[in-house]
Length: 376
Ligand SMILES: *Cc1c(COP(=O)(O)O)cnc(C)c1O
Image 1 (cartoon, rainbow, N blue to C red):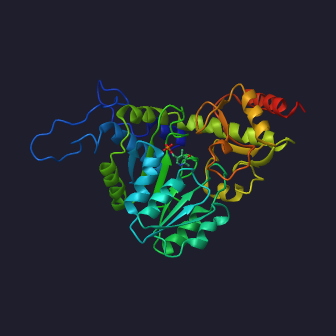
Image 2: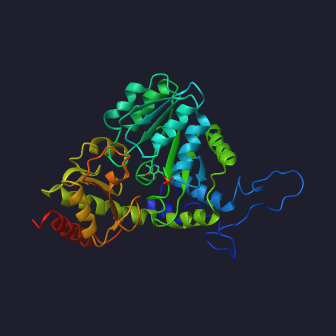
Image 3: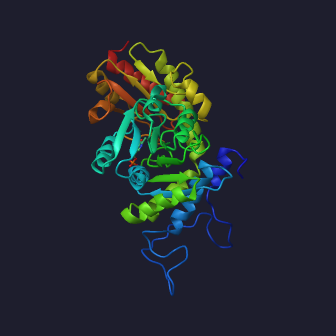
């Protein structure tokens, strides 16, 4: 299987061996505890530690993260649960941790928590591989590429090489790319981490996260953390996520193609500035992205004149919901500045491109831009 195409691997990912009269993907197992006599050993003992529905999903994600390789995946109740599991389980008082300063908007909350535990936190931007300059003595480097919402891309191999030379572990937040867009472990990272709330599950109807590691000891630390804090996904969410993986390649192919088409259309538009899409050959992120990514993601960002223009644009869209998050089969867009956490202009739009037909989507965006900017 590991040499086959992404679509072939996605539809079969994590499925158990066929068994007469059993379904292809076994249904969710709802269990707080399992029948267990004698010594408490074996795969399934208590519901906070293990669940067969997670096991199937964890295998599936592992097969996509590192085809043909032996890796360990741990699923969590959300992306932040997965991120916190890596950072908080590893960090010790006196450690130095390097974060991006343009990453996901909840990272500053984690930074404050790490500092409260006596960890020194350094930050630098994703673009220009600027984190290289603050690596000295760090125990852990946290990378987010492409960054959200700025869509800068760093050279993961280069950062990993420098980090490992100094004994620094590397984690990559791979949420935006998904494993079909980028495989952090192949690029040398120690942890591939994601919010599967986004493109990985793609329907905007559940929260989930995961961490995949090659090193069993690192994986065991993450798993142990899940047991301690209990940030476990519900069986129904885990099952829905596994079901959604079957269409991951179909969804991502369409969404990435739509994103490129949208970026190309916006590039020629007078009222649009600050356009970013790593798949656009003229984008500053493109050289790094082309070297390490296999698909460029479904998020396009750009800037309209001011807050009013951005709000009129969002109001005028008919096929695109005004909502946060990204990666859904239904297009969404938002004025990112409304949250206050990101360093973006008032008219900054983060556009998550869905699986609609390309012409319909481009026509909707064109009419909304015309409506927002006075019709020219
Ligand atoms: C959404 C997101 C997260 C947080 O994920 P949740 O599932 O909402 O907890 C983390 N990192 C990135 C890049 C995200 O986009």
